[in-house]
Length: 238
Image (tube, rainbow, N blue to C red; front, side):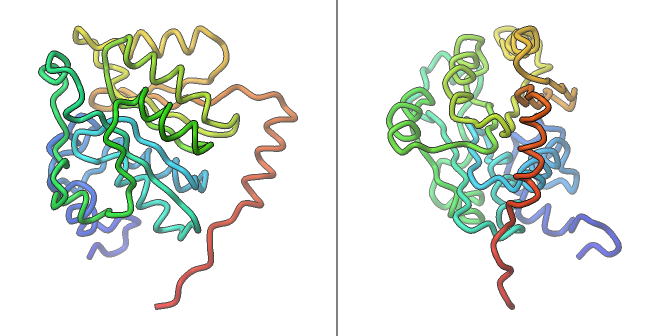
């Protein structure tokens, strides 16, 4: 166990980066003590006390691990983390470009370490129409990392941002991946130009951008008050 440090490196390597060859795209590495952009995902979920986190697409389950771990550490009552991935339903053409999930098997390390993460094996548009909208699911923290083609990334943005309240937070991955056919950088430019969202783009590995809706002064004050009154659940003893 790490001593005199905020981060428990043994825990990081045994729970958060273990058996995840895809986390290198977030500035970490398989089995590494360095979380890279993963620390952003954890900090955003933790600081906003996000009750509902949704990750669209994940090769190794890296982002949903960090989301769920923040909820565990806060002991948030009713906290839920969803992972939506089309997996084998994705077209062969796009699987050849972006690959397939590493955690599909039920005995994968990710699924054993975080069994409460709710996995939705559907294309993101189908999950939106068949799971999230019918169940009135509001998303406090949304991470977009599914189809990186422009049309797919924009569709995910256009659909799922409607489920995020004004004081929620959205992250997008592959925002500095300028290799064809990745269209996420173009989407981030368009979001910024729309004037609706503040954008902070971190060039960590393949890039992670944080998007938050621009609020009025009164809306910011209300959101600030809400963040001070929303508290995690009671700490369990033992």
